[in-house]
Amino acid sequence: MQTQNDEYIAEKTSAWLNNQEAELNKPPTLIMPNIFAQEWNSSNLSTSALALQDESDPTNPFFSPSSGFATGDYISAANKNASSGTVPISIQEGLQTSIDIARRRSGYDPVDQPTTSKPHTKGDHDHFIAFTNEISKIPFLSLINAENKIIEQKSHNANDLIDSFAAAFTGLKNQDIEGIKKSLTQLTKAALSYADKKEEQSNFTQNILQQENNDLHFMLYSSIFTISATAKKGTIIYQSSYTLTRAIYSVSLASWNNVKNKFCNQQKTETEDWLKNITTPSKQDSTVRAICLEGK
Image (cartoon, rainbow, N blue to C red):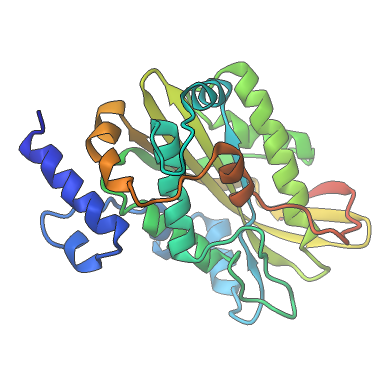
C-alpha cells in the first residue's frame, strides 16, 4: 500500500518526467543540493581552484571530459533483470534511463568537447554543471553523501595521480577499483587529446553505477586540473594538492517500484548505451602518447 509520502514522490516524479518545473519547485520541494555547482561558485574553493577560476576566460575552452563505469555486481544484476520491451522495467533500467534523461535535458554531451576554434560546446563545464543540476531534481533519488576532499599529490608519476583519485572511491571491491583505474586512465588520455600548447582548464569526471544489495548507487566524482599538450606529450598541471568533489545518490527497489509506472512512455536506456553516452572518447587525430605531471 502506498503511503502519503510515496504518493507525493510519485506525483513529483511524474512532474519531473514531464519537465514541469513549476510543479517540481512547489514546496516542500524534493530538489537536492548540488555540491558541484556550489563548489564552483563558492568562496571555499582550494587555492589552486581559485586561481583557475580567477584566470578563466570565457573565450577559451573549459573541457569537461567524462568516463562511465559499472561495477561487476551491477553489470550482473542489470543483465539478469533486463526486460525485453522498450520501457524501463528493472531498477537498473530505471536508474540508467533517469540519468540519461537528465543528461539529455541539460544538453550535456561528453563526446562534444570544446576546441580553440569552438570554445563553447555541449561537452563544456557549463553543460556539466547543468547536468548535475538536473540530477539533483530526480525525485526518487536520495543524496546520501556530498563532500569536497583535498587530495595530497606530490608525485610526478601519472599512475600515482590516478591511484590517488581512485583511492577516494569508497565501498568498492578490489576488482572494481582496478577497473576504475583503467577507466580513469582512458579519461586522462581523452582529456589530454583535446588539449593544445596553451594551458586550459579541464574538469575530469568519473560516473559509477554500483549495486549495493537491493539498492543502487550513482556515484559522481570530479576534479579540475590545468592541462596542455604538444605533439607527443600531454601535461597535467597542479599544486601539491587538488580538490575532489563527489556526490553519491541512492535508489531503493521499493522507491523504484513506487514510480515505475510513471515511466510507461519513456524509452529505456540500456547499460551499454548509458556507458557510451557518458564517456568521452579520445580525439581521433590526437598524437598525445605520454602523460606528464607538473607541479606549481
